[in-house]
Image 1 (cartoon, rainbow, N blue to C red):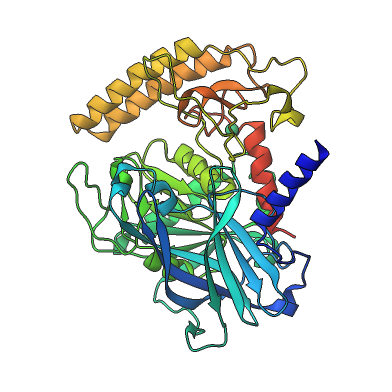
Image 2 (image 1 turned 45 degrees about the horizontal axis):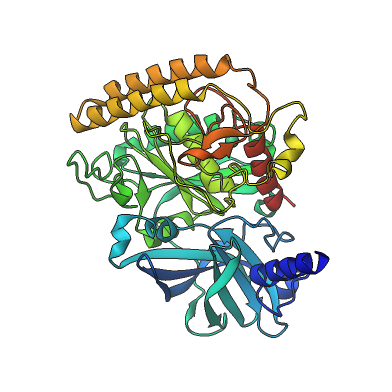
Length: 475
Ligand SMILES: [Zn+2]
């Protein structure tokens, strides 16, 4: 038994930190300059294969991250990168992340090849290093899929300072970026004469983020800056209703052919603009009322700034980007059987409950709460199913946005009332229905910003996950 445990431990160790590479605490100034290196590359493949090809390596401005928390032990994300000093054969920086490619690979579009531009950012190494990218396998461990040797002093590395003619400003300033979480807010689809609107949208939505725990009580741990990239016409690309636009950041609705999924595929332009200020996390507001947004761990989150539910979208999508929280919601169907879930998901806020006695958020559960935890699921599912049908019909008829907003308002009213009357409201347990699965997957509380659009908080498990990430950037 103990032998088996040892093997598992060894495997985990070797998988997360590349084989035979030392992983000790290191002194920043021994290995790095106070600048950010950005490696831009193309991530190309289909549903069975993927390859990487360097685009270019550039200076991305001053280093805003921690000087001490250089190695990421959080075990989050579909991908993981490591910077390994060649001379000392030591991991000197690492981070988990997710990517558009990683999501796209699971869509029907990936039956054909696709190519996505991505960036990895880390403090500027003084000496030659190996960049390693690993991917989480079906065993839940990371396995190396690419490596590239880079000499920071070679002519293939462009050390010129970033320079672009866009206006940037500080929204919240609490101190030295090395000891703060730094957020950059970009905007797309704002006209030249709409800078004040963008400024007001930024202030309003950033306030919404800091009205929610744990961001509220830890606001002094954050800096927020904004960059304005105007265009000729208001709005972004919306292919589903046939509204086409070409904007500076190329944000678009309809990512992976989902009408409300807003992403930007022109990563190079987005990163160039963001590099004008120090940042670790990025929010992109789109000057639109049509409901939409997106959020990918350690990439960015997007929000339709004028939607009636923009406050919710802002906070929910930031949860994806910031702490790798997954959706706790699911689509209800009339069928009573779901696919069986084989592997415990790595995301912090859902569980397949394979071992109810060792629930991953067990430390937050009151012993008197039953696992799994009963809730009024049948009523909820029946109602949600009707709402989905209506939602689909509203979009199919191309109705004005206020019709959709009214539907969401009705949904919110019903769900709030239903959830507020449940026996285990406010308790941490394991409530069936989570992570797009109606059955066999469980969420921590009756309600959470990752579950419904109700006016409520992050559940305690999500709050804890967010706090851990804040800690990674403030010391
Ligand atoms: Zn939650």
